[in-house]
Length: 501
Ligand SMILES: [Zn+2]
Image (tube, rainbow, N blue to C red):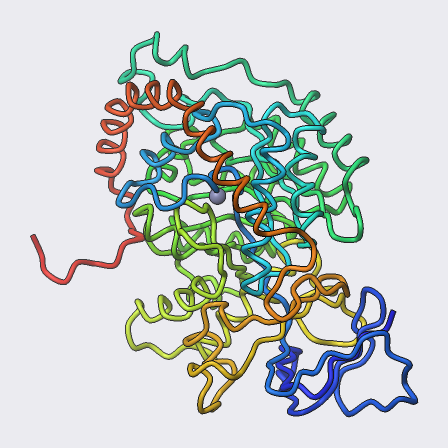
């Protein structure tokens, strides 16, 4: 199958940042076969020719951190710190969803992402009952839509109330018992992972099973070591929520008597396959340890602001040579799945350091996080992230007609500062046209919309008793939060106030 993308402005994002004007890209089957120049019928015949005149051709965006499990909660909250927001959406406080419901929910997520130019995402899925069937139902939604997915089921095996400080003294035993269910054994978890790999990894060249201990404080050291060994043995990426909030930094000191990152280094958990999700509360020493290990940080600027977590030290990470990827995070903590908004925030937040010189363009740096940075985070650094011969054909074509592009002065800056995903016209994933002139080619979006509205209504009704439980424990978490944020860590992830007290 040969697809010719003819005469576009090609933002290659290759090593030399070539921008080609009025040139061609040839796709053969799943890969990019040729970039640049004008192809003639001699290189054909072509099965399909896409006219890219007036279009920007770029590598698809990689959303390095996302959760589908709260997709029905969009727009419901604001101003809640993570530890309180989690009571509203955590899988712990969700009633079971049918397999069909889980598939439709993933379809909704995948459709929204691909229509706004994302071609791959890591979904930290809710491993509902830890069966391959239930997780497979979630992955199926991505397969149906045609988005590339890092299937990363969140796993934990420590009781909920021991993942935060002080709750053992603040919360009555009866409430703690109601929350702390018997965790699965490490062997059960590893068995689940193996079955998932066997059934789903590399499905249609677009499913990539990953390892995802939910967060170090939510896992025993034994489980963290087991995940690190599996990652090394299988050369498999591992993603974990690390130091998203100040409470988590305080938790690490309570649990380990040292920083979370120092503990992970001592366990042998840090590696070049690790993606630290968030890394908002990293100290200078933590950053040095991550740089030494060659780890990635998945930056989620909008979610971190919305959940009052702070601002990740991205300029310091880049200065130290840490790879930075970009994610949207939860649908109810962002609340858009278009990665373009996050790219803009990632560019602009670098200025919070004040007018100190940065290496290179802020816009280009942020765009690289959303392409090559994310590709490396999911272990596909040689396959995705650039328009280059030999790479997978995950490509996006944007219309340069909308007024944000007029006049076209700098494609990268206009992409980062003017675009929100609405100019996306055509999307290829693994060589297959998934969006054609703004329309999804793979599923019936109108039918999905109707089904999703009905599913969400039923889901919210089913969750009523869980919400009541969450409301009962809220005061204890608020007290825990108040105590934890009063601690002095010697640094802060919030910009210093302009005026003193
Ligand atoms: Zn997350």
